[in-house]
Length: 475
Image (cartoon, rainbow, N blue to C red):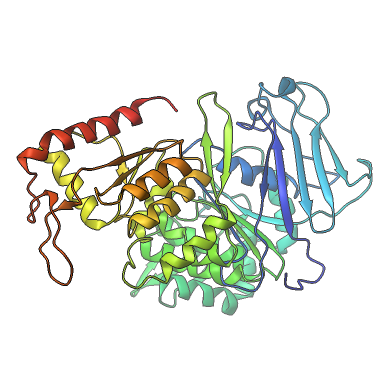
């Protein structure tokens, strides 16, 4: 790993008893290695599956001896030892723990390695940016250095509020370092934003922005622009070795801005840790994962317990082959990334024609498939297993693979390696008829123009019914 001086890189956090974490779960974080995106850790998953709680737990370690965190009743999981909370943070150099003092109580005890609670310690400072990023339109003049702001935010952070407390301190800091801050702002917005901090007749301050000759006050500034301000603020005065955690950076942002924000994350994560939770496929970069970024999918199981699923290193290595396939550049495109934001019920096929034709056949037979097709196919029968391995790593339970009739060996191999999933094979060599051109022609389930053949209607109907039946059974 790169030499990052005295900074303490975060290795992992263990959470037990906080909100949905009734069982102890440990999350390991990526460390920057100089490659683009290498220091990024990404959390995906449905709502209410613990992504924000992970960032909240990290934020607790910004506290000090004089301001230990306390946990109100609604934050304590009653399934866990009468509401006891245990948090453990591992860095390159130290181990920090936060434990509630008594059953059902909110008070906590800090420890660093084997030191007692009354020993002073300076833990890693994690710049945490919440998903609700409303900023007060009018504010007082105040200054605060980055580390002081991080610590003070923890002091004022008791609930998941809609606004960012004391962001005015950051605005005046930005004004003092306007050249550096504006460089990032322009990279996201694509233009130089004219902004100043002005004072009104009542003595309070506000942000004045000029766009295309029109002047806007803080109140008239769109949520998206405010969000860009807050994200750029988390980065512009950070240092190598810092850790920045951002909850749902995509909120209120146009997709074009999301893509540019991702470029900033990739660049800064060469020597910093960037932790994000997201519902946006625009914020997942497979090249970063190949370079060392981690991708977690959070799931709440049928018993209400949270499960944290990490994409394995073996699966990450397989991604490189997909990205280098110039004949199938769409295999890991935006449609494929959307899979990571679905709860389950994934249908894997060989290629893009399968995706189109199976959908067309289901419409013709008036059968609604309960699943979602993976992107534009897997790029060939041999790739279906690679995609299935990724889905298995990330905790998917309901995955179906459909093979062409001439791929029986691939189907059998899949069934052996992925017994938890379901596989099918059609009787015809292909999904549709294909004329012989540079290779032999093929007879398909459908005509060349995509009309389901009458003699194959019952087989296709049975296939769709079997898929829906598999998806309907509780995992």
